[in-house]
Length: 70
Picture 1 (cartoon, rainbow, N blue to C red):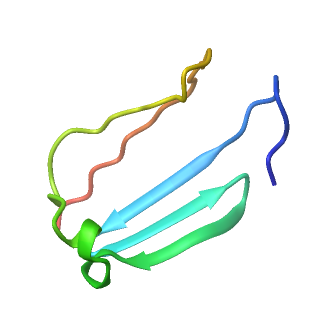
Picture 2 (tube, rainbow, N blue to C red):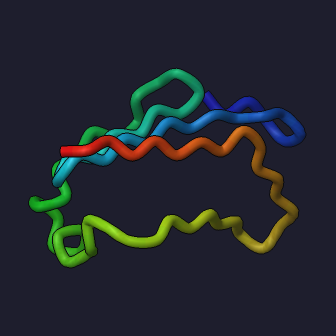
């Protein structure tokens, strides 16, 4: 599903309570319950959003954040 170096890839990340889903270039790659993972269960459910890279050049475009009320 990775489009390759130099191509734009898309992620859609949805977090609702303990539910985490990640869709990468149109394919669901993660569908998890954070409360069932000891590391994720300790993480806050609210707070800051961070974007990362791995010691190489990176660009982000069309970053959108949608916050839904409970």
